[in-house]
Image (cartoon, rainbow, N blue to C red; front, top):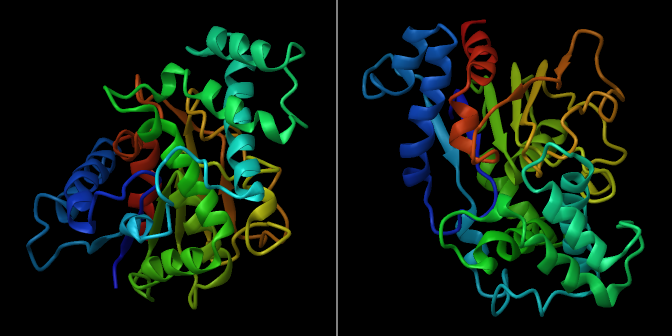
Length: 311
């Protein structure tokens, strides 16, 4: 079992636990180092082969999306059923709406224009089902998704499919959680979830932990998307994940996945009096606001992790 368990997000189906650990662990150590805990940072990365190492494991599940039938024939969303398409549309609409509402967002003008084409009043609720693909295609025009020369399907439609699959496919949902739980035990002090991984981590800490967890960290999390993620979380109604003594949620203000950075109002239910929920910090990840490694390398992430390891 690991002292720190990492849970990745969307679009990692070509990666393995080993390849992700090679990238995430130095970023994790770097965030702890800049927070002032050089000895702990060395035990995670530079001295990771020593007997004094801190055991860190990536709970990788991306390959499950490569299983025949898990993603369908392609990434164009044509084979999604009505419920799945509605979820994908809602996510795309929320991203557009959030960018349109913020005049300082890099994609503000694009989002306003695209919503204007779809609906002159900029209302994103109640869009007819036949307009779902138009909404999704509009979201692909946000520069926020323009990573290198990746195709539109890679940039947006595949992630949308993976989020909807986790929310709607019970067998896949359970398989992903099993992958994470395989690394969690009494020794585990920190679970870090990024993007969709934050949803997986939250549900596990809320339901399955046999012993209290000192720290849950969620990065770039969509947990605050009310009708899309929040209302589908397990258990319902959502509340504080009672398995965690402390929960730190961190977001970049330009990260559209983390559309609602302050989770305190949504997750206060059943919070133990001694538990701590911190969900107001922001970090600056530059041109890639949703990048998991950039999140891990920040002092705001490294400090609470170091404190949990030192406690």
